[in-house]
Image (cartoon, rainbow, N blue to C red; front, side):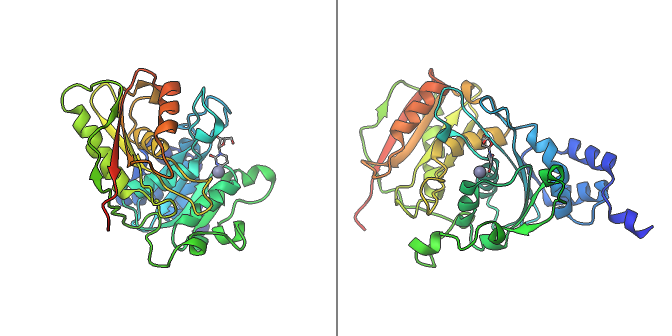
Length: 316
Ligand code: THU
Ligand code: ZN
């Protein structure tokens, strides 16, 4: 029967899902997995991957895992999960949708087409998605709709957030948004840096370089205070991320969270195993990250060496 060819076969889908490791799936691998699962398109595969995404959530506080799986214009598939941090206020948490967007941005994905997510995206996430140009057209499917006796179906972000407030309210049209190339000028390094220790070998230089690159790529059009954070594990592996601001301010993802997302996405060590960290930001920034970064490290990785590198914007 023709119908059988497009209907997902549960065992095949489960096998395909189980096979997929990592937080970024190449276009070729995604096509192969869709074919193996018996679905017509990669977009149809996304909901089938949500259960495996949920298993990777880190939720010591809520025990409520959220998984999101998105398809980019490149054909690549991105996974996002929620992250919570014991001992810190809830505002340090990362939502699965934010993780997914930061993960796609870090991979240089130019546009997001569709996202399947285990639970209905909250107001902050609907707002956060507005930082992507053309966000209103992104398709969303909520897999647990099935539990509510309504068939999970694709709907647009526009249908979830009517008359959105967004970048268009604050920025000129030509300012790059999330998923668009950023090259923020940092200015001149300020000689005196704040440090609470000395990292071994070239780790210090590599951390600083990674945090600088992340600050250059950060999305900070509202504060004009781009910041980047980098963390190193005990094996000298480095993970970095820059802030992703929201026009509505509060849904903003900070640079510390962005770096931890990069670490989780690379299937690195737990955040508690961070041995050294570096922050790059403007000197006396109107939106400063240093105090928050210190609070985070104190609670999550208290023995980590931490360096702050400030920059003085050159007079343009
Ligand atoms: N959560 C998400 O990841 N996405 C949403 O939009 C809804 C809420 C997470 C945040 C927190 O870790 C847990 O679910 C409970 O709110
Ligand atoms: Zn949310």
